[in-house]
Amino acid sequence: MAADAAATGTRCTPPLPLGPYYPLEPGAGTTNALWRGAAVPPNARALRLQGRVQSLGGRAVSGALVEIWHADPAGHYRHPSAPQRDKVLADFAGYGRAISDAAGRFDFTSLMPGCYGSGPMWRAPHLHVQISARFDRLVTQLFLPGHAENARDRWLRVVRDPRVLTAELVYDDALACHLRWTAVLARG
View 1: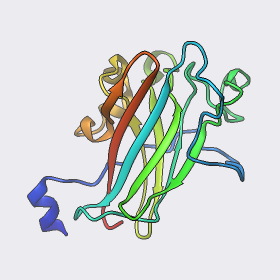
View 2: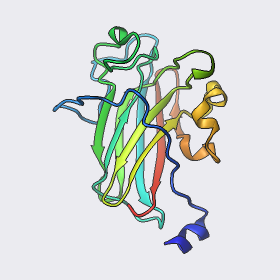
View 3: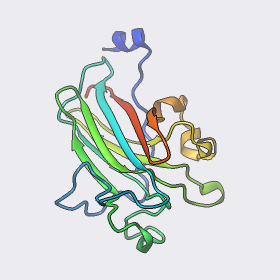
């Protein structure tokens, strides 16, 4: 396994903090759709994240629980400890989960997250990710490609290679953004 990784230059996806707004009670009806509204609200954009979970050796990791949570387009979290939680968009769940398929793939739909914070605590738009597989558990954060605030984000700055925590842009326009990302676990 280590020889495969050395040959391809692949490394395990680095961990980052869970953050203070992991859902206390995700809810029984949780799906891979974080936005549940009929239409995208004004001043927001639809987000689709497709990804894959693989082992360091390149093998698909099936059956992994992939969880994501993030702020709404205005930077508000749906969490009892979050500031301005009463301002979260009504149809924004803020949390979703999916199980990776036989090829290790997962898929989420949501809205593009917004920036939040102040001063040195300013955060670029990001998605929190937790992957629980048979042998490994990864908690990290995923950032939006080319976002101007990435350079200021303290958590992205501590990663040796920020590209591994930055999603690949598949499609982008004024209404929607489609991202792709691969998470690499040691064993899966």
